[in-house]
Length: 400
Ligand code: KDG
Ligand code: MG
Image (tube, rainbow, N blue to C red; front, top):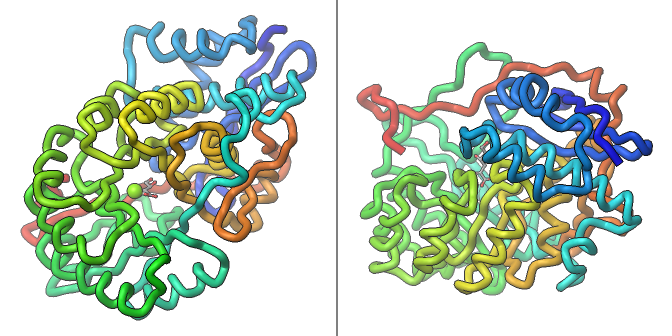
């Protein structure tokens, strides 16, 4: 069996997705997701110009070899663009392997450890009462774990990362937000006080700091949140601050999660091996795919760290499916972030995980259980879009 073609589609059914199709000479093909929010065309160019020619004629069964060859063989290694491109190929090869074996990918990974993956969705709002309304809607829908974010307003402040639409704005430049740590630090504990005094004890809550605080600020916030027993506090520090997680640990027992800005097991290793975090939440689409993700999970297992793979709306249903295949098959799974996709996305990328009563499952279909409708994808051309940029009140770019 040989690879005959590698095709890349960039489509925007509401937001941009980079989809990779690997075709073989026996008629099987696989689909992967290589979406990198705000840098989609850089990944597409790397795949089309540099990676596709390397794959033609290779045996698609040799996934580990493809991972090593593409991530190290170029001499240049790591980084979001390269590891997202590798992930797109990796997922497509796992999809082919499953189709060839007639088995779902979770079965190739060792089989199910659990019947479903505990899932969480996002509740955001302009004030604590609006967040509470949204939390109640999600709890009514069956969620047992919910991430809560509140818009932090104040003199000269506008916008809060993680609240509001992040899709294409048709602007030629990134949206700019003004953000200060002090009003943010003041706003989050009252949010949790509001929610905890009105919600059932057993409803689990998460908060995402988006790497914006200094170590001592993060330690203070985590300590202030201790009475509200969070499921975890996510990404309190910038990814370069690996050793600084010790500062937070010295002050609090709030469970910590980190990882969506790591691009390999090497970056995840210090916080896992130091037991500085409790949940590793890399993005399978940015660490090179299932092949690297299952190794990160195995390293984490040895240190009692659980998985919580990144699962926002800017990665597509194929990657969400890969998340759940791994969630079902590793012993140290913790929780899975998820979104509900709108109709245009479901038309372009049919299949993907199913949510029921708090848990995600995938179909027993061979491979990842997802597909791409190429004619539908062609109806939604790429639209340039950026993630927002954050500045302080004095006009400087925020140091995060
Ligand atoms: O592209 C950036 C988003 O994926 C990120 O802002 C979402 O932090 C995020 C999360 O935890 O889902
Ligand atoms: Mg996050």
